Each structure stands twice: as C-alpha cells, then as structure tokens.
Image 1 (tube, rainbow, N blue to C red):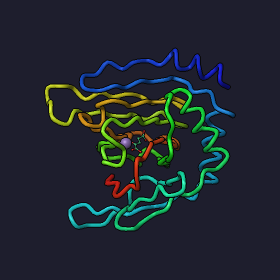
Image 2: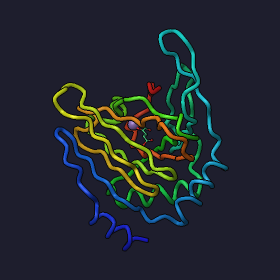
Image 3: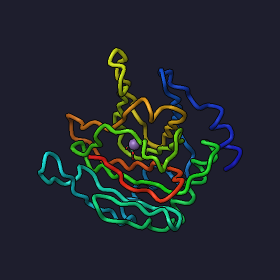
Image 4: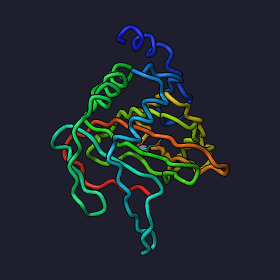
Length: 213
Ligand SMILES: O=C(O)CCC(=O)C(=O)O
Ligand SMILES: [Mn+2]
C-alpha cells in the first residue's frame, strides 16, 4: 500500500486558483472497489438525519451525516453536544490512505451521504477556529460523480470553480483556501445514484458548532 500511495502523491494535480491551495487525485487506491467501500459505509454507518432552520423554518438537512473520530473530539451540532463515534476498521484503513497522500494526520471525519440528485451541501467554509488557521482537509468521494463548487468569499471578479469529483478521488484543500473560498455540492438536475463523501479533519481542540445547510 505504501508504495502505491507514495506514487499517488506524485500524481496529485494542482488546481490553479488564486488565494487557495487545492490538489486533486483522480484515484486513491482503496482496499476494495470504490463501489464496494461505498456500499459498506451506506449499510454500516449509523447515519443521522439532521434538521436545519432557515429563516425560522425547520427543514431536513438535504443529506445524511455521521461523525467519527478520536475520543474527545466532541462538537455541538444544532445545540446538541455530540461525541464522535469510534473509528471502525474500514474508516481507519481509509484514514491511513488519505493521510499517506496528504502527508498529515487526521483525528476526525465527517461523512456525508448524498442519497440522490436532490441531496446537496450549501456553500460554506471549513473555517471553524478549532480547525486552525490553515487547515488541511482530505476529502474522499465514493459513488456518483457530483459537482463541487468553490466561490471566492470577497473577490466577485473571480469566477466560481466547478470540479467534478470522480468516485475514489481525493481532494485536498490546504493553506488559505478556507479563509478565502467557500465550497459546496450542487443539486443535480437529473436523477443520479448515491455518493458518500468523507472529509477528514484535524481538530485542534473540542469543536463547537458546524453550520451547514
Ligand atoms: O461532499 C463534499 O464533497 C463536500 C463535503 C464538505 O464540504 C464538508 O463535509 O465540509
Ligand atoms: Mn466543507
């Protein structure tokens, strides 16, 4: 595995963007096919359906989520304090592979399950203070290829960047990216199959609030 992943680091594609450090790896070698890993996660992860409040009205969050990590990586989500679920064998295996390419350690992962084309993630920055000033995020995609959109927070002259995230691809966001850019997953006009995304993070201390809709 190590040799494969070492060479994987060599083929990381740099996405040229102002005020950002974004890298894309088209295929991260996994223990099984990306489809099998996704099916395993869909079946085994205790997915949560969260509620969001927009302009005083409550809606179901348009995807399912789960939070796994080291003991103590607690956080409060919509006013509820959550403890991370423990790492599973499958998640630890994926974490090691992502860490080898990212060349950094992670202590938690947010899993997002986009059931079909109607599921999405609103634009946000992963800029919570507990992630630090220049967080490294390792984001693995499994299943349906979906569009990841990045929009600059202040420079409206910069065009949004749209990346198609292939199954088994790894996206790395580093440096100032979270400070200057927001990102999200668009809904699709046409029906499509499921996608699971795992965004690995390093929390510096107990996390407070993750605002995402
Ligand atoms: O599903 C994705 O690719 C984006 C996930 C994401 O931005 C997050 O979990 O913070
Ligand atoms: Mn994010």
